[in-house]
Length: 352
Image (cartoon, rainbow, N blue to C red; front, side, top):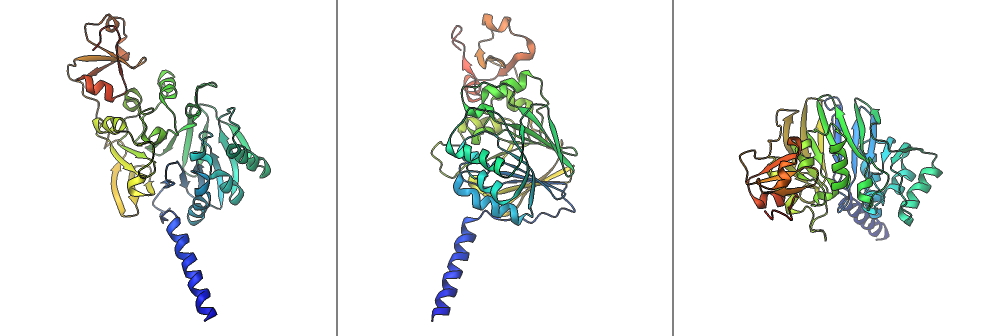
């Protein structure tokens, strides 16, 4: 009787552990030069990059997801992390990172300097110090290699922002002809700086900033990235209403395919450097060839309104503000609703 009771308890514990762990994926590394795992951590971010036996982790969700992320990484064979990137010190991105660093051998830790001093963030920094992990201050333009892939830091480009989201370490991951842009929680200010710096933002896949919030993914930024696919990491029925309809509308205007962790769970994109295959727990979602499924341009017909890419203000064509605007900063809108949906505000003088 006691043996039977013990067996029942062990079975119950095993079932509970299975139910709480993100679905595992077996990636054939003979075919995939790079696999990108957008791990479902609810209302948070965690992305595992793997290429030829080398691993990079970007964020690790809230603290309660730490053990799940560790289990997921170990199942994928990640006994050693070449790089761990903390995009910014908010708990939904770094809460689980202390558990990861304490559990898996980590070589390098990359983040941007801030004045954050929460206990959650200090725990991460203390783990980095205790485990003798090499600390790297994120610097735009720096490129790091792993396996057959590499990532380049695009942002942050300033050292003083009003909020921590714009300190996000934004990276562009490339493998052959395929590219992914990981935006962290970067918002309008950081996006504007990347555009002004003339960064090569074009990417096949965009991990949308700030869980699909309207505070990120401005029209000008999306037009520069022009992703064929976008991934949004957010929690089901989250309190913030992410992803916001404004962001979804802008992605739809681009003809961009959108995958969401709140709908699909963990999403995996694997590539041989030429083609990209997306999968979820329900199997293969789609396949595309880099460059062939290019997102369409925003509508370019004669428009009723003209926006300024720098100020994110839109005007009537007859407004004096349009006459002083450089051609490269002009963006055309076919309707007032279209301009507002893409994150632009009406001019206070011509009142469009």
